[in-house]
Length: 474
Image (cartoon, rainbow, N blue to C red; front, side, top):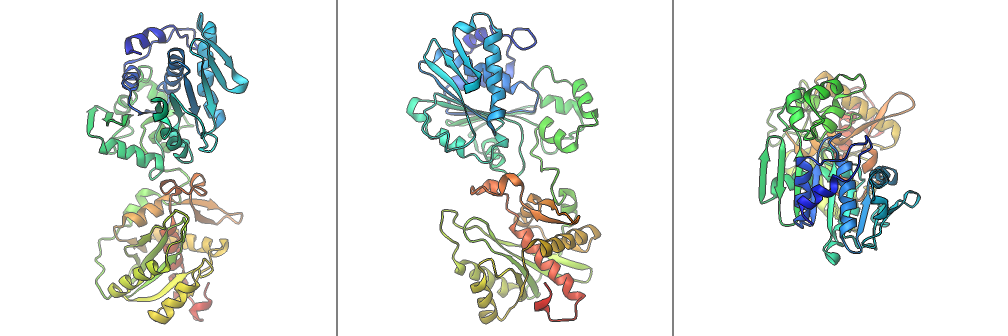
């Protein structure tokens, strides 16, 4: 397989507009790196730049010239992957003489490659259904929408059996997602990184990434810059201007799918700008007393300790302590949590800890009272009290009576949260739907520090207006 031969082959494929396909320079560059034999290759490019067309053409070419080819396709859903297969089937049906080289079975979601006894087959984005196969070429569409990279890793582990390759195409995802964590590592850790305008090529012996995106300090409203991050010739400043002006276009969609910048969901509970504006530059001196919010996680969720200090102007969150459990089926040891409390108590004496003991915290609660002499206040994590906590958290953030020190963990947990609206019009903080059931570390999108922080803040606010025993407050 050579790039020149690929170009001639591609020109035999007829597009749905009746014209024959002529792959563009960035597409041929991707194909050249694929033909060089690197095991993994990614193309991260904004929507409307011919990603699906490219992969479908590559699938046919590989199936037509690889003996007993096993081309596997997967997307976030079988229907989504059907679009990729449908493009390949369309090429076969529209292009002269290709019906003699392939037989299509749309209902079975496959294409048989008659010359090579190969097959192109769609799989669900599930590592269980993707097991037991040995690909010569695995293609993953819209990788950012996959619930996790488990299927990717499963297929990657099978490439060596037939010197196979794995190609992934996608647009940007959400910050902190497993996809974006991997994308950032590929962009920054590769030994060979070249930058051409808004195109980054990051290459290592195992993986090559082609990434077309605005830089984080670029103006997303500068149509010329945005056009430079969209390599397809059909995407121009003029076409982008019409797209941006559409009443249906949102700022979040524009940044993520047109500028190719990792962007948080528009359902996010706390805006990035308002959170950063609440950052305090106040130094917390040793010996200053605090309350602590505690959210416990034993096997999969993190455990978070969040200190809260009273100030003349309101409330100040100190630096959180986030403990990641083993996530291998074993539970976090209680002693690990106790060690963190002892270290924090030595720095800033703890007056009280706000927690939900029903979450497996009876032992921690008793230890806090008996060993540290700390008052423990119970705060249920049922919907009603958590809605009150979320409301108080947002109210103080907006009126300026809540500040926080610079803390990457706390910031990440806060910005991960989504506001889940309740029937009575209130809301509570939850993780994004796509991350709630995953047991992979990166895509869980932790919000545990926010839960701890909102509980301790809500309790402190309630205590100021309550004359009865604090233990009965929540």
